[in-house]
Structures are given as C-alpha cells and as structure tokens.
Length: 364
Image (cartoon, rainbow, N blue to C red):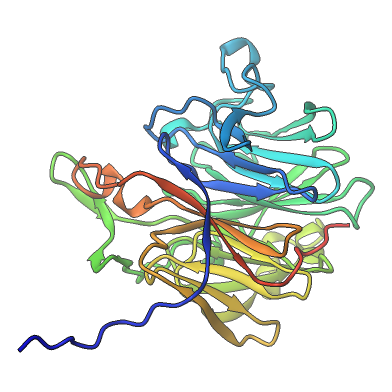
C-alpha cells in the first residue's frame, strides 16, 4: 500500500517574464513606462553586456554596446561590472557600477553611479567616488533615491564588502559629493553568529583546494519609505532588518559614531538579498533560506506572500507600473565558490513577477 505522506505547503502566484540561458543576472528594474532593464555583474560567467534591456523577448546592450565595452581609455564612461540598475520613476536609469569584476579591488575611477536618460538613451552624467568613500574593500551593491531633498536629490548606496567595513554611502546628486555613514557599524556588518542554510545545506565558501571560510557579506538590501524619510537596510549575512532616518544620514554635523543612535531594529525578517518598498510603505524582502518573499507592513507585522521551491535565491526586486513585484531568481547559492569549484547552477535563471496590487514608492 502506497501512502502519500504530508509535505511542505507552497503558495504564491507568480509567472515567468524572461528566462536567461547565458550569464547569471542579479539586478532588475522596471521604468515608469514599463521598460525592463537587467544587469549582469562579471563574476566569472561569459558576460556579453553588463547592462541590458529586454526588448521583444531579447536582451539588447543598454544604452549601447559601446557603453558596455571596457577599455583603459574609457574607465569612467563605460560599464565595468554592474551590480544594480534602478529606474527612478522620472525618466532616468541609474547604473551602479562596482568597478570590481570578480570582487577585485575597485578600479580607480571605475566605481561609479551613472545616470542614463531614458528618452535619449544616452549617458547624461557620471559620479565617481574618492578613495575615502570607495575603499579597496568596497563592493557597491544597491542604491535608492530621493529627489525631494537638496537641489538635485540624494542617493543612498550599500557597501556589501566581504572583507572590510560595511556602510551606507550618501551621495549629493547636485555636487557628486559622497560620504560613508554607519561605517563598520553592527547594523551594516555581517552577523558573526549567522549560519545560512539554503536548500538544506549550510552555505559557506568552499574552495577548490578544499579550504573553507564563512559566508560573510555586509549591508546589501536597501529600501526607502514613500516619503523619503526612512531608509531600511540589511546585511546579506543576517536575518535582521534595520532602519535609520535619512536626515541623520545627510547631516554632516553629526559624527558617524553618533549616527548609530538613530538606528532602529525591526527584528528578524529572514535572510534577504533584495528589498523594495511600495507606495503604502510596505517593505518587500526575499528570504533566500526559505525560497520565500516577505511583506513587512509599516506596523512591523510580517507576512509571507510567496513560498515556492522555484524561488531559488530571490535577488533584486522592482515594482512596475502594472502593480507587479518583479524579482530575479538566480541560484546564487549554487555558484562554484560554494561547492569546491563545481558549478551546480541549472539554466535558465529567471525574471519572475507577481501581482501585489500596489504601485512603487515615489521618489519625488
């Protein structure tokens, strides 16, 4: 007699928007007109272009093949290894270039924030960073914007370093001046007691020579409240959620060690890579240990809105004008560096979306 045993319950309705059979993607953003952009950091795959637009079911280098072609002569005006792309809701695609292929030390002048005009499909401005802001250990990860403060607005970037201090980098978009906040603070650092478990296996660095080391990455996920007054963030190697007032981050008269007094702890939400907020202030966060997506309400209540074995490492999130949550699923935990050099990823990687009946948080 064959008995069907009880099994784990999976739920959440989503659909595939695009399947990737080449390099592994990390970032996605959907513009206010519904254009979809993807980025592919150079982590060892054969990356044809590090920024692309999905056009008629194909990937096209964006804004051009030239912008994706790197040479020593155009380090500051071409894309080296892009980790994040963000459409700001008002006609600009912002490209966050780590300048650090294969997690190397950032190339001088290569780590940058680039504004691309979505109407002309051309680069409008480039902000590079000083060596006091982008350290030899820095890995620029994700970025959020608020254009209601300052003359041209501000950007907030996570430094998710694996071997140096984590931080939130604040950028005055008018002047390009930037500075580090919460540098090496507990809230931007990996949880030293965190032991991630993905697909039933402990996730650690496992090198081809047999040596191992902990998987420890600093501040990664980032989201901003609809009024621009609160910034949410989390280390990748942690299950905790933190927030801080953006005013405190911008106020240079407050010493960095004192800024930590403004940090609020929201408790555990699961271990997350990407995060995003909607127009009502709900925060959406992945839980890569449990193949899930969480929704954190403004009152702190957490709901799981999707739990499915196909959500194999939910990475970056974006909310489109169609009121759908878009997210990259890329099997990051199956990369060779976690399996003694053996690549366990199975193509295709995917861009998925689910209807959440909410619009993205405004930036202006």
